[in-house]
Image 1 (tube, helix red, strand yellow):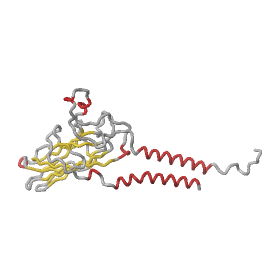
Image 2 (cartoon, one colour):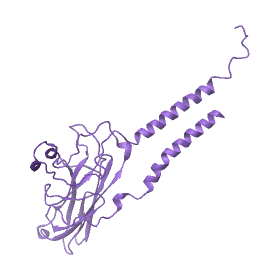
Image 3 (cartoon, helix red, strand yellow):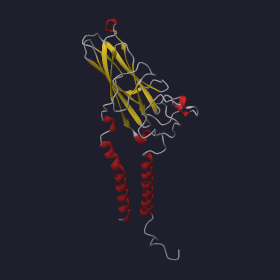
Length: 266
């Protein structure tokens, strides 16, 4: 009976620890909220990219052949989901649009899944693009191309169209959301500084005229990349369960004491 009560208490502790995580997943994500201050224009290069917070839906007008740029922050443990919708003119030939995501080192990031390149047939009113990135890591090897905490750039452009359609007006909508992967994406390491534009300049101990930061946004709670993740919780629970299993196994196998067949003097 004592072993049964001990195991029941352990299972109850696991249920209480897992309960809040399920409840958190069921709650609406803050990124789903719409911000009225979303940008209404796009940049034309990496340096002039329009800053876009996660959860905002940016809009912009341009012409076929233009390069449209936005930038957004992503922290460790997040898996950004970039979506774009291009509204085409009433009359046009077939054309192919593409969305690319770059990090602050200008390295193109691969899409885990999603249609980052799509062809709009003749007369199609709009085309939708999507790129779900890999999970942002807190640390990576220097030779790797893993996504790291910092600023990311979205580039939207047409890659194939006829000369007759060049310069026609189009409008675009871009939205960036992310899913928090949690401790399953944690790594043993962290960056000293996030990869954001101007971080090297702002870190210098020089006069105020050189302390400008080229990116004015970041994570609301600061850039993470700390040592704490929910992996520690499950590691602790696993250690407690292993200890209880060892105690229960010993109690079951030790027997009732001295065998009755053995003489007292033996």
